[in-house]
Every structure is written in structure tokens, then in C-alpha cells.
Image 1 (tube, rainbow, N blue to C red):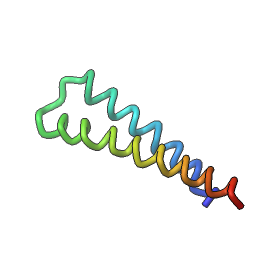
Image 2 (image 1 turned 180 degrees about the vertical axis):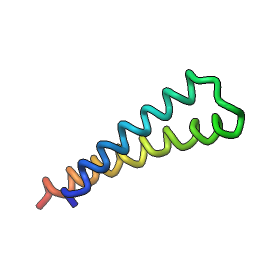
Image 3 (image 1 turned 30 degrees about the vertical axis):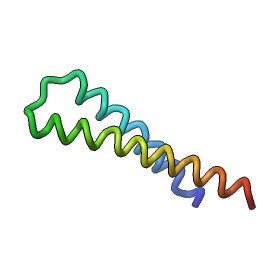
Length: 60
């Protein structure tokens, strides 16, 4: 599980960047909606996964 932490950290950064891009850029309606839904979703899933992996490895 620990081998996934770098990938999840990159996903967390990309999710935050997509959220900022969606909020600040003047994107077309469909793309903007996709970015504003996908960015926070990617951030949330990455953050929860990182916390879960860290807690699971501390428990061992």
C-alpha cells in the first residue's frame, strides 16, 4: 500500500490545480463543469486514501 503514496500525492496536487483552474479560468461551460466536479472529487478521494493508508500502516 505504501507504494501508492507518491501517486496519491501527485493526484492530490493535480486535483487542487484542476479546482483552481476551474474557478479562475474562463473555460467553456461543459469543460468548466467537468473540471469543477472532477478536481474536488480527485482531491477528496486522494486525501481520504492517503489518510487511510497511513492509518492502516500505523496499525500494523
